[in-house]
Image 1 (tube, rainbow, N blue to C red):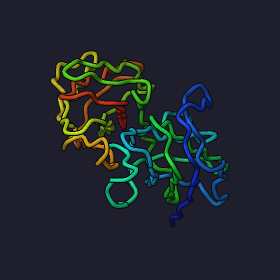
Image 2: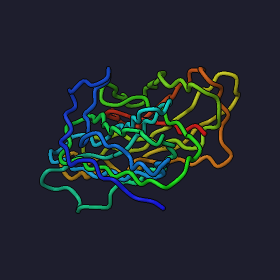
Image 3: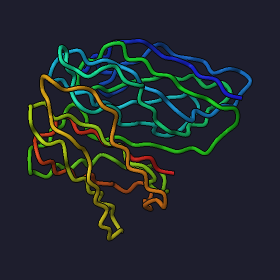
Image 4: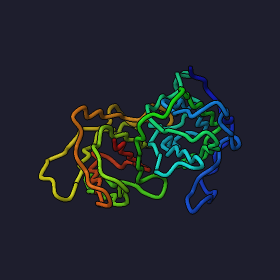
Length: 251
């Protein structure tokens, strides 16, 4: 048995501080159905950026009472285009596994690089206690990547060991005719690697741009990581990359 709950629409405000981070609560708190337990297994994110040359990158965060762990996901990509943007597209889907307690209360937050209109998020739940998969995000609206200059994002620290199975990357090129490609490297203490990945695509278009979904890298065999070890994400972009945002799902 499964069901799905929508939060929002809510306009995000990039400068709002809640629980020690720059984020906006989407919708209101929700008490899960009492016939649980349930597990959140997929999320859908919809929003609009209605100003030209504005970043679309953000971090989605789920907080549930009685559930220990970090559940932060990079989402969005590209630029807003008020007058010349692309057509409306489908909501962005994010795979996850967040087991809830019978009495859990869910809160949904976003940390957007720029103000977004009508942020609407749905959570899909299935019956039973699934495996907890934590996700840790870094970067966002306070970070920018200068062209051909390494940017080190160092605030990912898994609380428990496991395997990195997915990397999500978001960011924005806000000038016309600039390349959207970049290199992402994971530096994990105790592992030789290399763990290097090509990310991004297409040209930047400040006034002819449009929002995109996050760049998702699946790692079927996983990369082992120990608990309480700082994982450094190194980014080198061909052009200036605004608000690069990265999240790692650890199983």
